Length: 312
Length: 306
Image (tube, rainbow over all chains, first blue to last red; front, side):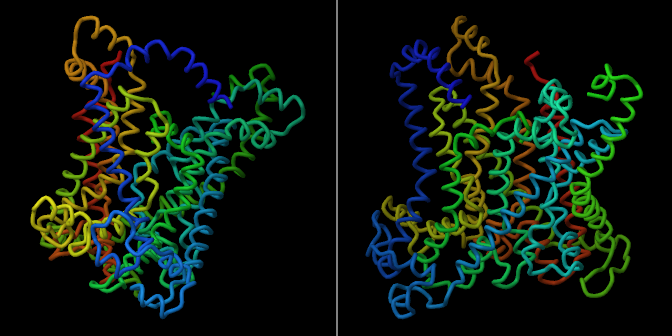
């Protein structure tokens, strides 16, 4: 709500300079031309995914340069979701093997949701303890937490794999979620910044009204920080959805395979010649679609969150 | 921030009671995060360093071998090749990405504040590395890929983008430029927004052109931001794995066998976790040194703004 209001205010001030700036100088034309080129290069692979996914493989091989889908069909999508019978699948250039797509989708949703919800909750709780509670040694403990930022996540993957194996959680969805489920130093740091900005007076007023200290977390600090919570939540969801290296280490069978790993397997199992490109593109599109939709809804929030306010 | 400001009015006795209450609550609130921190961050870091001094195959207990893994590493031509390939990748990837991102950011800064445009630029970043890799595998396919079709129209010979030893690394670097350049551009754009406008106005009044004001004002002011951006992107770039694993798997003939891929292969292909850990420590050291040097060279801490 506040952002739209702010926008309107900006719009009221803006018109004057824009009018003078809008004159089309040669420099501006070149600048816009470069910008349009950037947009085309950015969007082209998405279009090509769609165009390929809506084709048959024989059609693709006959017309590799056609800009529209050759031999338009939804067959590839049907194949991905296991709705196509083997005969037709082979006629359209599919392999005829079944892909457990729903299972992968469900696994991805489960893992990403678990990581996002728990990581956010636990990190916010820790950030509350580091910002709104007073206890001896607080700032020292916080400094140690922040020290965790110095270790690139890639370094902990191997030892974490050994640990997950010892816990007997290999090929288990919980094993995929566990290492990032509790906290990340960045999330704690990020929330602490926002919690520090919640005015003391509001908290003290709540305390006087008989709200407990824990109550101030749920009733005052959290509601007042809902915007950064949502932003980091979306970003965490997207990055855990897209993660590949760690789930690749942990999952071995369909029961724990997430979409990214399944796509990698699908790709490496397809033969060098006669790859089912239409099916592969349909599958990648379906795997990417939830994030693209999520982005469509929250684009403004995500785009504006990128900056240096939280050093991300 | 400390207890003294918070409860000054309430008196010392109350303060210590509140502080005790706070401590109890803090312990409750910190427990989950602390467990995660200790078990999945501190412990694995120490264990990774310890494992690098052992011989360990997951099945039998780790056996201390001193510096044997490190000695092997220094004499391992595949390791040095991986280092070389990774550095090559990082140089191409970061060089192009930073240059293009800077151009996009400057153009956006001068042309438009449109959220839609920024959204479009950011879109590739939301798609996973795996999806990106597969899409480009198809676009760059030697037989049926549209890129080679376009080359054919222009009259250039087909290029085995991902199957030729010379092209594979630049191609992978470019694929990841496509995915990350928008994010980097928005970071720089955010930095540009923070610069004070009056300096530019003053330069304009003094008759400085676009290029003059870019090199004399924008770049010096932007330096600390570029330093932060570089540190973040270089560290990310060194960890490249997904794209290589999906597109080339390290081939042809180790031409794209980046360090992370080699580490993965040694650990999960040959079950030599000790040696793999030693190489991870090496990567950690390299990243630490690079961060330090970049911080020094670009004087990231200071800005010309004050």
